[in-house]
Image 1 (spheres, rainbow, N blue to C red):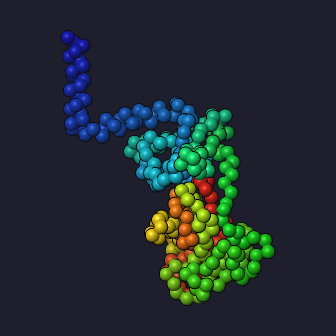
Image 2: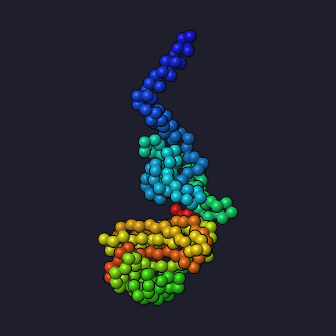
Image 3: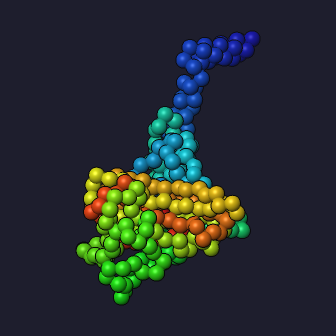
Length: 294
């Protein structure tokens, strides 16, 4: 009878605490305990990748099918800048996980696109010196060559054009300690002054495409990388974009989409929103890959 009474007393106290403080207290307490022991489990078999130095619950990310996905409480994330694993706990808390040399894990949201499964192949990260390093991930770019050796000094190579039309600006090849690039300067005010390309989007169907470009320009505007994909025979289209404040520092813009229905109207564009005459931007390292690279 005493044992039964003790059980009832504990249950009554627990219910009273929950009624007063709400069920979130129980969740936070249990989460705190699980977070305290998360590091004892070592490197988990499956993690997600984020390129920055931090990650948090609710942060926009990419899933194993290339879809937009938000990080969730309980996810383990490999941070690209620090090469460390963190576990996302309750209340926005993160716990760093140690990685013994030789340990490895599968990174679910990186890798080549596998059309047979409709998923990313993933890649492996291996621990060395307390940090996790990704295996080489060869994802060849299918983009046209922007600035190959012998390219003209004041014209674009095949596969690229100036938007919204050829008279919107002029081209000149530039170089500095960071390497060579293609520079464009607007001749007049336009809603979007851009470097455009259709390769290889016009031939792709039901594959995940990641497009990136390294860009710089004068501050004070908005730079954008946009992908336009036709989705049916009637010509309906959907777009995805990465917009950032302009900067004279090299900045990587990236867009990602599972493209469908090959069309001659599919394209991507890099440039300045609401450009005035004289505005300029420079582009280098344009990449179009089937999958997700770090």
